[in-house]
Image (cartoon, rainbow, N blue to C red; front, side, top):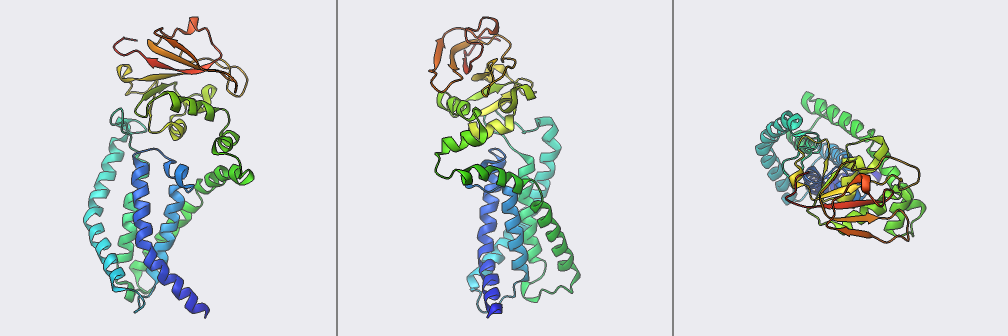
Length: 327
């Protein structure tokens, strides 16, 4: 009876694997053109953990003996996936190589334009998934045997991959991000994020409220004194699809910047720090976000931002840049 249950699970996995593979491939593609953490933010599972699931599923599918219980249409689906995969796999390898060769030229996030970012490290997972299908295709699954050298070697490589992706930081990242919702399941999303992220979450919400989705927002270069807001990868998690660019970016063109963040001398969670920007910015509007829950927005129109004459040096906020003015 137990053998029958195991056999049913193996066959179920064989039926499920193509769909898991396609969904994971799609999510990797989406995250390649958005930001690292996009999938986790919306599905509460990291890309690396999805890769582990696909690898385990592929390993089990490789060990499954086909029988009359497998519908012919599923065999045809596997054959179709194999054929398409063999056609695109060489192109994927070449494209991945070119992307990594060009990465130093484009900077860390590979900035094509104001509105499109691309992450080579995430994209490289696509040929990895493609190789999984080649692994399944090496020999006819019906005649699979561990005594044959090629499948045995590839199975060893696959198991090493599974271990590698399982022991990386993705599981720790998942546990740390799910801890707060488990401890306080009845809080609102905003309350949970305040508990987990801190006061910076409200500031990010403020930026989302006062800026359009296609805005290009300038922030300070990454330094510990400015913490989260200077960390472009972390901040994009909350502000996407808005684009971010650092003051020290090699691709910075101030004429294309729409907004500039204001960091007050007072930290959002207390203490003192250097304010930013520490230079004059032409502004059509300055919006200050007072650092207290009861504070109201303070809006100043048609006045350049001058840090030496800032009437609210402790407040955070954002500057809407006046276009056509050199700065």
